[in-house]
View 1 (cartoon, helix red, strand yellow):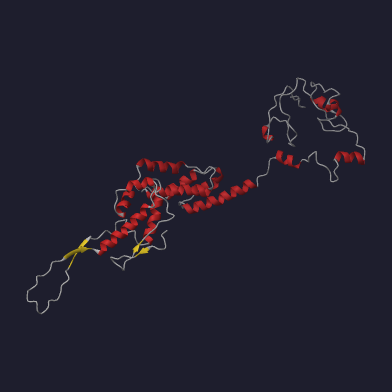
View 2 (view 1 turned 180 degrees about the vertical axis):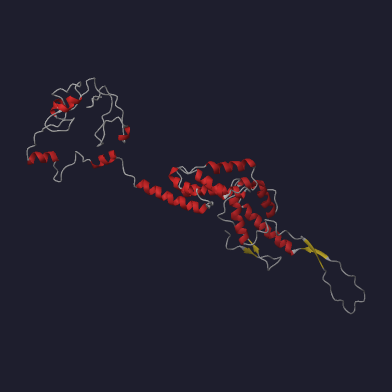
Amino acid sequence: MADNNSFIPNPHEPSKPLACIIFTNVTKLLPNNYPNWKQQVEALLDGYDLLQYPDGSFPASSEMILTAPTSSTPTPSETTPTIASLPVTTQNPAYQTWRRQDRLIYGALLTTLSNEVASLVSQTKTSHDLWILLKNTYAKASRSHLKQLKERLRTASKGTQSITTYMHHRKQTADLLASLGSPVSVEDMTDYVLHGLDDGYRAIIDAVNARDTPINFDDLHERLLIQELSIGAAQRQTPAPLTALNAQARPNSNDKSRHGQNPAQSTQRTGTRKPFLGRCQWCNIKGHVLSQCKTFQQQHPSVPPPPRNSPAHTGQVQVNTATAGPSQHDFLFDSGATHHVTNDLDNLALHHPYTGPDSLFMGNGS
């Protein structure tokens, strides 16, 4: 923007004060941001009705002009005839006004250039010279640069970006191509945007591809924003895995009752525990154990029953100790999972391979 004190007196033409522009908050011109810089500077100069200076539509007038001499009225005593005086060459006030205004604009433009670009315009004299030099240098991209921008537009993907960021980058590249004389059509822009989306936006992709008429960029952006919100809501409502829920729901064995007592201690105080009747691990019927199960013996006659002092016979919880020496592996504490040993890893949220010397014996004989 320009400073509020933007006009200074003009002694050559007092009725035409000079505009003193001070550019602030204008992006410094770099070799790769000419379209953005040009848009900002053009808007400010046009607002002050001064764009005609750098664009060349208001050229300088003649520096010198011819003026008629000032004639004096002869007195009656003068009898010598006078010779008509020739016109006098003087400075043109309009040129002086133009020159001073152009120098003010030229200086303001220099403040918007980076050091790298400022060295390029050191030989220019007027704002028009500077303007044309920058245009010829940065507004005309090479063929390789155009191909690079088009390839960036074609291959970019959304990835982890938000839809707003993704669409902004696409629009920025398309605008740069347009400023370089290679605009992108609406249909091509739509294809580029859809190509970079993942399967979560498949419904939008199919709907847009099925249209008979192309969709404009703003409408496509709005639809993708709605789909992004739907995807986020669905992810927040996804239930936790079964193993995680079981770990959360399982009570802690170290928890105390309301009165600071362990539930087992409370049971011992209030009454005597019932004797353990046993339950068969094969048919799940109380009253006998696996070594006495007739159903198991009929289905698997070749499998010997476990010894009578085994945990399967007594029904008591025992600690199995490896006989091959101390294990070098870390202990795995009870996590509350629904599966501790399985041949299907999909049943486990976390798993750890067993490399010890022991083996498992399944009830089906495997």
